[in-house]
Amino acid sequence: MTFGEICPTWSNKLKADLDKGDLHTLIRKPEMCIVGEAGGYTSRYLGYRVVYLIPFIGCWKCIKYGNRIGKTAKQHHELCKSYLQPIIDDFVDHWNKKHQEITLKKKEEKS
Image 1 (tube, rainbow, N blue to C red):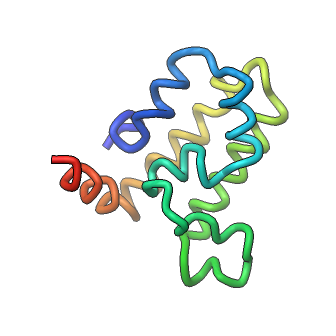
Image 2 (image 1 turned 180 degrees about the vertical axis):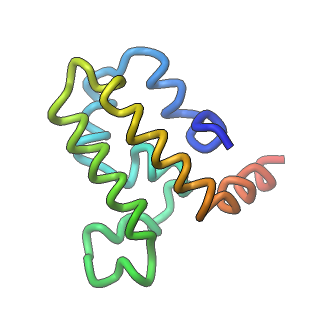
């Protein structure tokens, strides 16, 4: 699956220019950013806030991707998209290997 299929909203935002609100979301709200959208904006990826719950409610690797995305957006405001691309590519690869069924289920629910 492509990034556009996994995260259509963020894919479109990254094709256009990110506004201050988008950057704020990437930096401060990992549950609402790229990883959050992939997971369906569920509480599953809020586990980064309560570390001892991560093994039970979320994927540690996805949570780390969310944090990396936030740190990258904070450090590289102006060139955010180019710095994010390698992280997004890695995330998409991970998502397709471990969580593809979540995206497929979301697609089924929409139809």
